[in-house]
Image 1 (cartoon, rainbow, N blue to C red):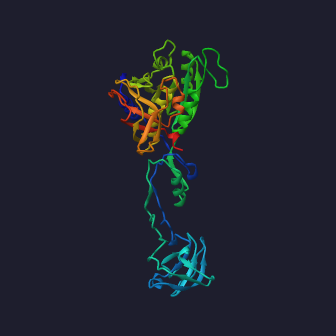
Image 2: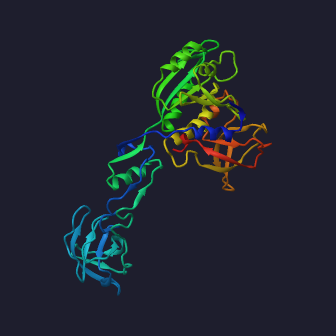
Image 3: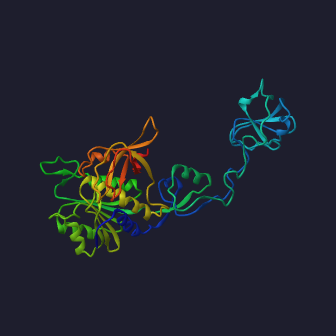
Length: 407
């Protein structure tokens, strides 16, 4: 087992252990946020017919090209019907957005560029461009074109496109199944009042919510006391999960039994301890082929480590093209204390400087690993690599946006 390794090495080990989940077919309207597991092709042209992009009049360009002209209106064409009319010389058809272009017409004049005293004639003062405001059949997609490729996350626009091409059932990755287990004799349920020395269970609910927001299905949640027999018995009862996540019990304390009990059950550990802050006592391995992520018990350490390791692992299990979130560059508003040998994840807030237009970032205040408000108030994580001697105001830093802050 490796120990006290770098953040980059630790995350690479975690991601290399990710096995993609099975594939299932779901109704397209239930596929939001799921990872696509097939290339989707258009079986027909989109749009399926020439149609008007504007409310106005369908005309023949050659009738209008020489200057102002008055045309006879031969039809009204609302959206959703077959026009069944021929626009001949000197004629026009009143047409609505999305309505099929009638035979004979080749251009649309927007209604605001026309003048009509009654519904029988229309005066056009300025010639339209040939083909103006016509959406042609197959303009967006031709039959057989690839609409979207396997590996993308299905967004609301993607759901709309699936509907547009009639893709009623779509193959997506099954959600990775997680077991989330918090530990500690001092931890009590959230609906109880703590006495001296007790804390309400925040790690369990927080991690479960983070897992759901990352696209996982939390099938097991449990809080266990610092009791070796209870830990072993419960872990042995867990079935059909893709990732075991523990919070607490993996450090060096006298009552940290998780790692020792899993050892006794045959766990194979890849690493323990990472050169990072917060979350140094992080453990990762496998138990009977199932990945096990042991998070520290401090709330901030637990939450940050989930974002840095469990979230990208869930994405990799789902077959995402890129399991890592996009990062951006920002300018520090103030100095951040930094230990040179530790990769630091500072909780931050982004803003735009009104004078320079620069993207700025500041911390959320006290960065101690027990200050969970620093995580609650954050919309990003500031990455300060090991080897960096100082993080001074005005310097450029890498920032990772937290997914739940994007609404």
